[in-house]
Length: 152
Image (cartoon, rainbow, N blue to C red; front, side, top):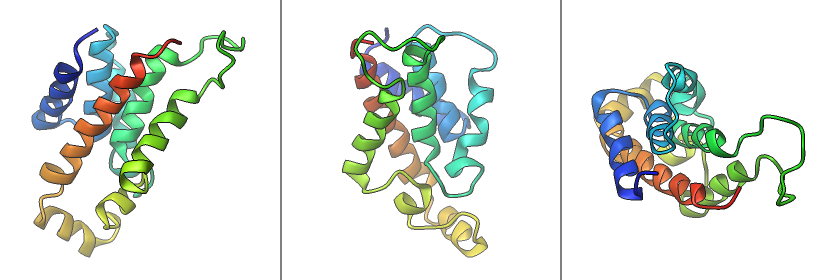
């Protein structure tokens, strides 16, 4: 597995290339897990900007949950050996983001509703993609990387 700083840098570079928040985080986590598939970035596309720019769960958070699922997601209905709920990794990530930001929604993090044309204009004017969103991409990738270090 790639070191944490390389994984975070990869997510940042994916965002720099033009990949959306959810796509960048998922691609970086997939690469650090050595998971390769032509559908990796495609399955994350709709989660960007709070799920289709609806302002709901932040795309970076969604991408991280999808990435964590590559390691911890289940292939059958058997209980996990640890006895943890199968979605424990999502619960842990959401808890960590909420502790830092008080929310996991785009609206909450940005203070803007991207469905509103005025707020969308403000988003672009304040360059939130290059500041707030890219920082959250890096932060969320780092948190997810830490969760990847846990035993299944």
